[in-house]
Each structure stands twice: as C-alpha cells, then as structure tokens.
Length: 355
Image (cartoon, rainbow, N blue to C red; front, side, top):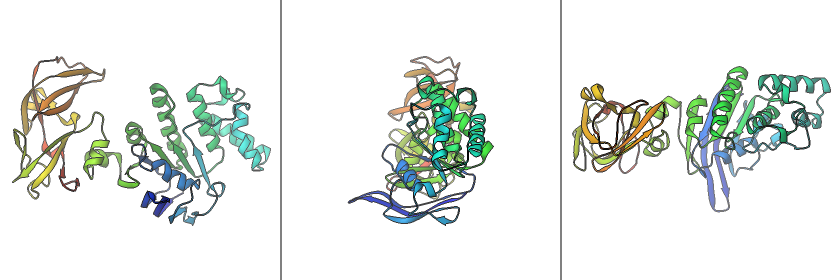
C-alpha cells in the first residue's frame, strides 16, 4: 500500500513539532525516518499510526483518507522500541491475543501464528514465556505480533535500540530479509545511520520537525543537500574546512588547493564549506596521483579490525582518514595523503546548501 503525508503540521500549544511535512511512500517501499533525538521522527510515525491527533494536513493510506480514523482502522502493524509483551502469556498467546479480541476464527489464528513463527524462526519458542527469551527473541515476537495482523503497512519505532551490538546486526539482517520476502510497505524510525543506510530504499533525514532530504542511501551519502545532512551521515564524521572559494581555488587558513574538479566550483564563489569524507582520502601510490595531495603527521591511530582510523591535522584543524585494517602506521609518522575534489561536497557558508 502507498502512504501519503500531505502538509502535516503538529503543534502542542505554541510549540510546532512538525511543520507542513510532505512525504510520499510507494507501495512495497522501505522508508527510514532518520534523525537525532527530538527531530520529530517518532512523532511523525505516531501521526501515521493514528496515536496522535494532527493539527493540520492529511494522511492517506492506499488512497484512503485516514486522517481521523482510529489506529485499528488504518490497516497497519506497529513494532515499538519496548517489546511490550504480556509476561503471563506464552509466545503463542502473545501472537494470538489481538486476533482473538478481534474475533478472528480459530483456524485463521492458527494459520497466521504458524506463518509468522515460520518467517521469524520462532517456532520452537511458541510455548515459552517472555522471561525465558533473549532480547533478540523477544523483539522477534514483537515483530510477529504485528505480522499476524496480516496488514500491508508496518511501522517500526526504533525496534533495535534495546539490543546489544551483535543482536542489532543480526536482527537488522532479519528485518531486511523480512521485507524482501513480504514486500510490504515499511516505515522505520531510527537515530542509527548504519540501520538507515543498510535497510532503506529511501531515507528521510529529519531536523527540527522538517525533512532535510528524502533520497536513496547512495544519494544522501554522496550528494547531501546541505551541511547538516553531510555531517549527520557518515561514521567517522566528514571533514569540513571553512574557507573561501575563489576562481575554483579553495582557501582555508594556510592551505590553498585547486577545487576545479568539483562540478560547480567554477560557477560559485565566496565563503564556503568544503567537505571530504575520511574514506575518500587516499594514501601511498594513490595519494601520489591524487589531484590534491599533502604531507601530514599522524597524531592518533585507532585500529578497528577491518580498517584503521587515523587522526591528523590539516590547515590547523582535526582531520580524519580511513586506511585498510592492517595498515602499518604509528603516532608521529609522516604520511602523504590525497583526495579528489570531484568526490567532495561543498556548501554555501551562509545558507549551508550544497553548491
């Protein structure tokens, strides 16, 4: 089913939490609402679910105006951050409870529970109670409870936040597999950019109750529309230089380099931010052939297994670059680094919009 949010505004007294939001979600799409705490992403999800009465605007699900319909009438299944399982019931009881209350026939309930348990691989757990389950198993049951409703739109509100790192990674794969198998429309709220980049067909980056950019993970990562999106996406964070673009040359502190390879460098001029991601910085032979290159002194080395994060100083400020995991580099080493301005991002200093 499609989901359309049109000019949605939500106010609590004089405080505007969401401001004229417009989001179109295609049938079968996996959309992630991403942003820092307090940006309005969970609030937007709750509005779509019908848990909050909006101030203005409209919400459509599959072309039907559901703006003032009750949550139970919207044809959605919701998974919350907390598992919210009934502790006195078995897994099977938790999965079937809502269906029994809705008057679904016993045969249909058994069929749906069996299907959900098979998809989520929780069949052996059906007769256990929540206290006997791990965190990952409990979250699978919570997802199963939404799954048995047999709806076309699933809403996830930070479902992995309470899990440890390994469980988060494992369950993230399960949710991706679930979407590929069911092909349902899914809207997923998170503050974790890794979850967003790996799960989403499209990401809506939010700030201050507004969508900053709505695009594919690749587009958001490589062509962020403004400085906020560029800084929010990417770990470690993008390197920013505050400087002046003049005749395709970029000046920052005691450093000047030719930025002509950046697509719009020759058309723009004036104060600007220049951003280059740590993984876009090269060393060794690649640096010797890079359009922009310089020598730096290694200050901090952070071995991370698959790669190594190196901290140094460029133009008087902290600068991060990512090297391969077995890189032999130490504190105090002199390193030749380079990068290509064509892969960079540049933003107007006053508006912080992409050049």
